[in-house]
Image (tube, rainbow, N blue to C red; front, side):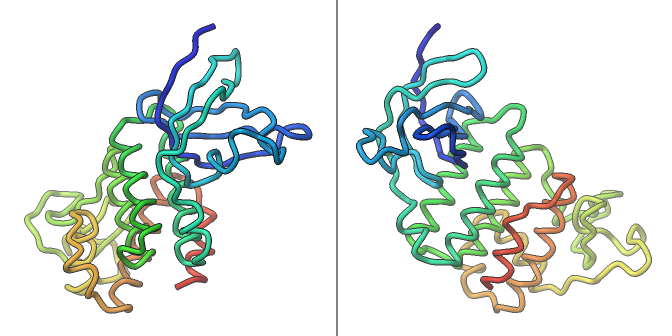
Length: 242
């Protein structure tokens, strides 16, 4: 059976036997890959920390029947250590890789891979508030998967915005005619924060108040979990860190 090489982000790992691990990876060109890293839990392993969560690596894989086998791994981005020493970065990174795992169940695209790498790099460098990096990632990843929230015109009827109601189940910002009874209103600062996170306008996002960031985060979490049809378990730890 053939071998192939690809760039990957390590999403999660599971122990297998006494010394092996099953590694779940998001690759640049082969989508989501599950492979066995033999002997990786031994201190003498040549893979070392290259196959730990949040790491980016160039791997050579042998195509197996059910699981591929990692034959080589070279580090491309050692983000794990800088993320793990900060609790807020660590919890945000966990939520990101969990969402990536869910969103790429079928087919992944190079854009999804690059988006995740960029998010982990930003977390490792401390470029922005960790929760804001996570929120921006979730919005963009959902958009790449075909679930872009409507943030300008009404997501239901298309009426021109701006609007002041956000309903996750209806696709985003909703006009007052379409808004269900009791739907919560969104203030202008929170609406602006949602747009800034989607567009990568960090000049706006970085100066937002804690209250505005928290309000936007709640809406984004509700939107992502509604479309994924089950909760992102790591988000509860992110909430505890903020």
